[in-house]
Length: 214
Image (cartoon, rainbow, N blue to C red; front, side, top):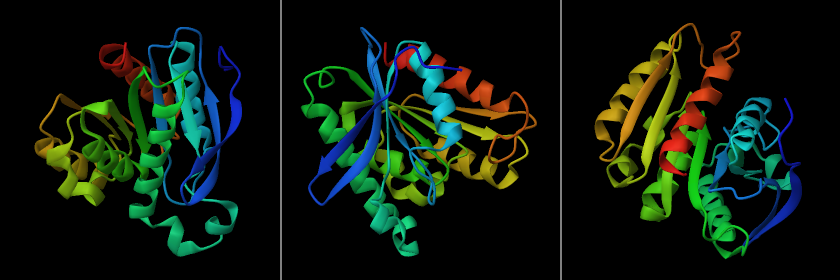
């Protein structure tokens, strides 16, 4: 599957780091979705790239970026520094807000695994600026204190075979105050490696963005 518009490699110039990123902006995009990958992953995550391409084909812009520089990624403790990852996500959002091509677009987050916690914490801090949050196999338990402040419409997607994940996401659903929905994908595990399950994630993410970002 190929995106409608080719991704453009860019460098995110943040206050304390320059991060590699890929920006895709289809013509007349109504919104842009910033991806937050899990610990130990990167912007090159094949699952996140797949979902990003599905969103691009629906006309949405996407920004996938690395939380860490190559030197930082060599330090194991930084791979699991969720506070740092959240600051980097907020920094990437500020970059989007400064870009003339992007600043007036509706904005959403897509968080995977532990990246879901960064997406929720950043959404809580940014308030109305973030319109939608989508989580795949997320760890919302790492952001419990932030959940009551999340105003964005939040979709939690979890695999039916990921029993700990189902329980964690059910608890998070109760704490979220805004528009919200939990979708359990039958037969899927934590990584959505089973045939057809990641395609369902793409469908669900696209539908959510159509509803809240268009």
